[in-house]
Length: 209
Ligand SMILES: [Zn+2]
Image (cartoon, rainbow, N blue to C red; front, side):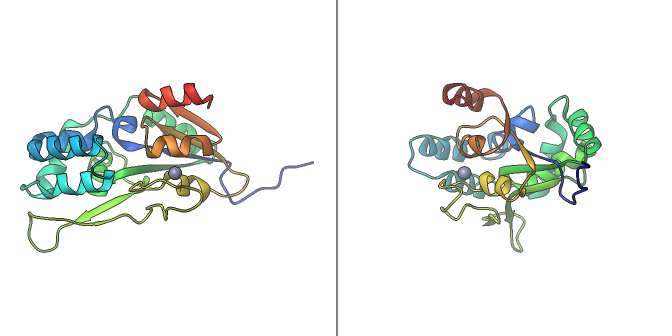
């Protein structure tokens, strides 16, 4: 019996960005360079559970006083993608799979890093930050993939990676790649296969994932 040809991909790979696809954490790199005091203050509050991830991210980037273009060139110049990413993308293409970047971070720094490395057409699910007229000052943040604090996810993440994986469709083998202990840890048990590093690896080992 022949397997029917399907329009859906056989495999859908979802990968976290900061510290997973990139060797360095881009958000931390930018905030350390352009708003170190705000980052120190708000990251301490985040670790003390006094701020949500979104509040930490937004207050920290709002403290940056250089133009966005300056942050973008700094990130594009300094950040390296993890070795093996191109081979992974080729392998996924070869089997007709899809690849989606899923990040709680922000497109203004994700896109330039990908573009600087010749990756122009990747699908990216993440937050956005726009400044209105002025080149500096507060951003207007938007999280089109924020969890609705409902099934399949109960996290307060900026981007609900569970939702992205759930929308891959029936019969698709889902793969998640990540490193973190928040939104990455939330989605890991829901993907068919997980490739983990760092904090997520520890959690997966402990939970038998
Ligand atoms: Zn979740």
